[in-house]
Length: 494
Image (tube, rainbow, N blue to C red; front, top):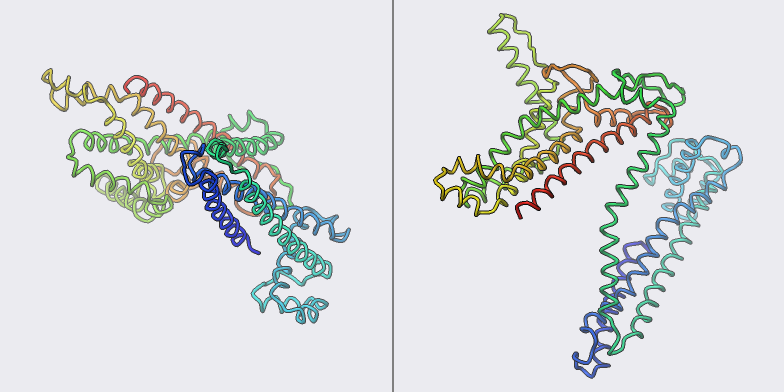
């Protein structure tokens, strides 16, 4: 039985348990809910929880643990000469076994008996069923595929029986616990509390897992390359090594990538901050409610555009436009129509990224300016100040801590951008201050280092984790500082 059907049956058992539990509570109370400790719905929810939650936990654990156990058992059945091969080769063999197993499920028993002893015919039969194989299957692969199918079927059958039995037993157990003075509400609310704690812990645990995984791989990188050479190196030249070559030459200087990241982010903020801040001031202080209700959603549409679209916009429109404009200006001044702004440049990437960041600046700043107490505005206007003077001397100073926090959060968003930089600024790791020349960022090199046929244990690949943990530390510091400022602002003006 498929997982979807199992979940559906468990949900049905839970619904039936809910209805039966609520009715039993009312029956035991003689139809008077006032005699019950909790409302009837809590008794039904208590039965539904016992019918669904334990079964769902067992189903999840089974789905996670069973494939790993089956794969280990199938790999253990490989011949000794296959076990002596590398992990990558054994992984390829296991993938072939999985493909054969899927193909055997599509064949009839007669077809399996006819082609299982002939690798060529078996490959042709599986290809006819839409399961192409990279090579001729070996006899041990066919045998392992049969074992894989048998174990998968047995595991699925056992999982179905166990999960449905646990669901039914839980429903019956909870149903029999119901009594007029049974504290069903306390039990249900305790389950809800645990669920909320688990849900809120997922983000924390995920962050911890990401950090630990990056730290582990970054530590392996620093066993090949000294940390001081990475953090203070001025040359980025990883010299990609093909898989199996064992090459580890190259220079892994972080400084060019870090400068490119900060430079492009700085240019983006130069475009985003004035436009976004002025838009926020207009919408919060000058615009009518009708204009505001129309302009703000339209402005925030920019935040929903995928970054790859911005990248194509920069590559096909903004970059060529700036290049042609520079050529025309150079021709008018010097007579030489050579362009001094390249299509892929810091200016192109910063301009397009700034457009992307405008809704972040404007929306956050608008909320912060709107939160400034009305009494400050009225007091300033009552003393004879104009609206512009009130904005400049009262509202903006009052909202400044929150605005600074919003700008820092926007900066952390700019630091982590990848697709716009790849298409608009290139991949050249340089140390230069000319905004008309290409540069690159940390995120782009993370993508580059994990792309291609490389040894996953080579420094050329492991450096991506060192770059990742560095970028994580930078954005984390920006976010912490921003949250500190925003919290200080809230304490002062709420």
